[in-house]
Amino acid sequence: MQSLRPKVGLITPSRTYVMEDDAAELNTERLAGCVTGLEDLGFTVVRDAAGFRNWRRYGGTDAERAAELKQALLDPDLDLVLPVRGGYGMTRLLPTLDFRRIAERKPLAMGFSDFTALNLALFSKAGLASWQGPMAGGLAPGYRTHESQIAFLEALTSASWRQEWNAGASDADTEREGEIWGGNLAMAASLIGTPWFPKPEQVKGGILFLEDVGEPPYRIDRMLLQLWEAGVLGSQSAVVLGCFTDADRHVTGDLDLRLEDVLSDFRERLARSGVAMVTGLPFGHIRKLSAVPVGVKGTLRVKSGRAELSADSVPVIGRGRDLLQASLDAVRHTVSEASAPL
Image (cartoon, rainbow, N blue to C red; front, side):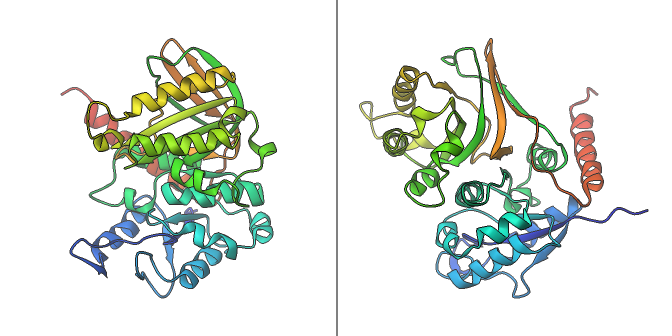
């Protein structure tokens, strides 16, 4: 019996892809690649009948994007909800969502960057776990990596999850347990004081992971300070930091604040509150993308310079899991062949 292909709802809640020399014109080649990359992995791609749109800096008007998002989250025939890319715009749509119905539907969603707003809202308002992970743009031909494909498929097919990496030189041995949650630092900080930010009781003693891109060190300091003063950082069991891509590119001189300075200051603050800080998580705005669950119980271990973040139960896809597993095996085989000695 032939396995049914899983269906992915491809959405543009934030930005879309446009031409570099004309922001009003859609980059149809890049958008077509988003579809192709998913089809190559075994998905049937479901897209709004109106096709891709562009309005100002968004992938459509607020009303258009909200309707598309609501449809995808509530459609019982979709197995995964996935954005084309990040950018900005998701927070404009959150007030339109019926989280009671979403909680009943229990959609599976993945994305990162601006998608962090939905990840945290799903957890806060509907009690649902989701994934921070590759989006369609990062899985398209010419942009995908084997590492991204493997992380994407592993997240959707394995009932448990584990990520290992080399811890930072200042990261002490530790073992902590708690709710894994977080995502993009700028988005998380922007949600404080809104209904979309997790409630204190949901994340007290949690394992908060954070990343960002293009933010200079002083702004990273400001956003971390906001989380600190709001009582978020000090209430965690551990804070795990991923990639802060291009942060030090904004440093203007020897006396300017550097990322290392910011992290050193917050390591001391957190230590005084008994909160572990671990760096080097291979997650963020990088080419070799990984995936991290949001809203699940997990364990962080650091020993002899190696770190591991794991969870025994994570959200997985239903229909077509065996087909995606076959795709995962094929990608792994390709990697194995490429690395085999001649």
